[in-house]
Image (cartoon, rainbow, N blue to C red; front, side, top):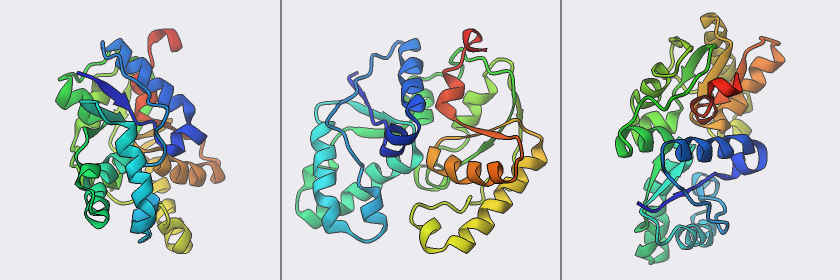
Length: 240
């Protein structure tokens, strides 16, 4: 299987260690994935705000960058959801069906559990952790408990349940900009639930959501740090 990694814009610009963690993890599992250097944005910001015409060249660039691969893996339910559901909208608008006919894009936990058939990735992370299921991974992709299956198999971890876990954190891309007060209130609720668990680390599958929740937790001086699922799964005893 020829596999490529969509690192995503936010990870490339703000969380490069997450992209590196994905490659370390896949190589540990015997997957020699590529990083197509022509990759840019998946087009989600444009589609979400109604700029479908402006999204056409971006989605066209995406299709070209990942042409010829059997699967694309990304550490983002949000971007995987965009590729699997929004690219079809853009393709129909542009009259270019091929834009939605490329390789299937998998969120990281989907690829590990459904494609590779593994839940124990030989990770070690001796910390008290709680997990936030991001909206796109939960509702658009339907990943279910796959991230939790992977976390439960991590050696040394103390995984605790997050109250009201399925509630949105309030980020929602441009929602946080257009509805700042509502977004802030939702983020405060999520941060309160995180603090109630007594966790040292909040884990999620999208760094965009962690950026939002982490900002609230930081301003509250909670002492809770945020970390992407890939970073936890890539951790070993050597990193401890």
